[in-house]
Length: 508
Image (cartoon, rainbow, N blue to C red; front, side, top):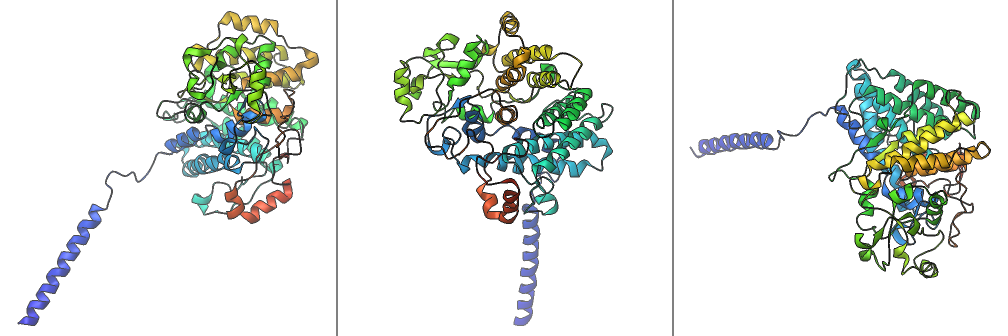
């Protein structure tokens, strides 16, 4: 009898345990978690993350091209001192591979066999090409063929492609993807860049193609001409209504703006070369961009009540000084402290909801001006594209803030007073491109290396670690050195030393 009772109890316990396990299984199942995601949202994730990371833009690209600089050291040092700070040089690489390339790769794989999502696939190809162009322009040889395939094919240690092999593939991608976009196909209304507008996506793709072609002017001018002509024939961005830019909100803020409105608000200043360049031609953009907090002796004293946007009062910070030496420079200029040098106005152009521009009519018209000046394009004149490029950028400033808008009369006066001089055309065009690309760090720096303009005096900081006049590329991340060393070594052996002096392929 006792045995029967024990068996009965054991059966009851097993039944109870099984019931509990079933209940726990159901309890642990997330009834609201998505099991699939529309790939258009992955494309949007890639677009949002293509916004330029402030660690590289503020600490390398803009100081190198002498538009913004900080006298301070520590975690924000880099281009201000011509020194290698791998905490900052790695940020673009890690963000783009983890958040842009990974998503575009997945979108392309998921949609390549779905004719109804053909437009989405080609949009992803264009964004991916833009990201890879930025990466290879910044670092040189990079994982391209195998880059971003860790999730898709478990390629965790990708091989590096040489830049001279990457650029033809980028040109092919942009050419094919732009041509394949079909206005009669599915409209991807969830796209955050253009809302699925195929005509605008085509212009964006062909404008990137023009940019890629012009990169080759020093290393392969024949190919550069062919690509520029093909891009122009396809149709590029010529009006601000077609600009490719990320719209931001208080919830999704621009990276650079978020940095300049928080802990680093008092650390970055407009440079003397940039301010003086705008002053030299009475450029009305200076009053749209700059603010100077007159009499400020600390960051907390940089308040609107003492802020002046008067162009005549702007004083740029000279290059080559640190936190200790800049104080005497400020005193010599009659300033209360270095906090009184002009800054990018973080309440207008660098406000939290400022747009992030990838490709603009100002940039594209100026590239066409150069192409026309070289005789590669015969439809339209270099002088006309030059004027339109300047005018487009001046009009674009109103989209940052109403307080940055330039009056049409001031724009007309400037354009008429500063025509293109054929004897100095390439210098003028690319110096204007420098201004028109302000805040687009990767593009400003790339075009400066490509064209050699504007003519800038090298940063004279005495503690520099480069041997040349300017930083030519950024160094690879420490994560690659520790995790993917063999492929990295092969890339370095092909390209040259992993330092700030080594030039990328097209930068000859």
